[in-house]
Amino acid sequence: MSKKPLILGIETSCDETAASLITENEQGNPIVLSNIISSQTDVHKEFGGVVPELAARSHIEKIDWIVKKAIEDSGKKIEEIDAVASTAGPGLIVCLSIGLSFGKAFASTLHKPFIAVNHLEGHALSPKLNSKLHYPYLLLLISGGHTQFLSVLGLGNYKRLGTTIDDALGEAFDKTAKLLGIEFPGGPQIEIFAKKGNPDKYILPKPIFHKGGCNLSFAGLKTAVLKISKQIKTDQEKYDLAASFQKTIELILYKKSKIAFRRFKDMNKTNDNKFVVAGGVAANENIREVLNNLCKEENFKAFFPPINLCGDNAAMIAMVGLEKYKLNQFNKLDHPAKPRWPLDEDAAFLKGAGVKF
Image (tube, rainbow, N blue to C red):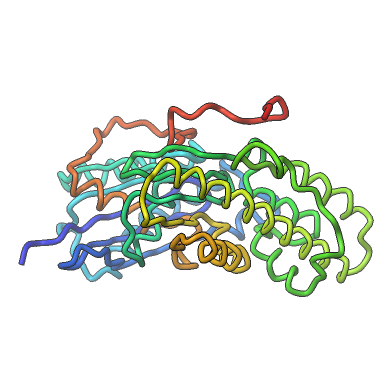
């Protein structure tokens, strides 16, 4: 029996300090041996959002202990590690630099290969941690910083089909939560509020709903929520607005995903159509249900990461590291941190009110 690769993953792109060790079984399926995540919610709560300098300081204070804990929990010895994979971007550069530098130093000390990982590719591959998933597939990446449809043709091979032209979906959730008086990070609480409200109480706009292909926009929706929130006087009205917001998002994602399905099928002539939904917002159970039902209607197979692996974590970084290790795709120790690092580097820049469809 040959030794299976053992990969250490490190993630510090924003406000989670995380480390994970993964390997694979004889069938080639990944096995998560440990997955340690330290959240900084309490650090940033009073500021209503992530403060980069405080986030970086917290990473510095915790990363040594987090990596040590991940190794201990894995039941493996440090010398058994075959490669180190660290997030190199995109993200906050002061945060990226902590995990990236630590990973490089760790790999250098062990005389093991170093792998620089695109954080978004981690999300893209995260369903592989619990599912048999083969290329190609359609990806909807919905997180705090990104909202995109991509055709995933292989490791490192992405074709963007659509993107937000303004706010990311996770950002829209967080800002709506803030307007409703929910503490940071409030996005996940919107779904809880929505269950107590009337989704038809407020008619909210759906920007570029009837144009723009599978591109998306959430800025106008956020502005409408701002105006209504100023008139709210009761908790029930808050619940109703949350429910109306949730329903509007579901309608937008349903229609835009349907358009993306058609584009994906036109590009990839296959009967095995797969749809992956990943990123922090993929933990929203209502969105999962809506998109899962759409897949049944359109003869696509739906894939979602486990709820606990939708947000930022190091297991997904180690997953990318594992695939790159098997292809001998290693990086030099001078690989830079990249605060902006799109998966499809050839895609046109689409941002702002000047975008025309």
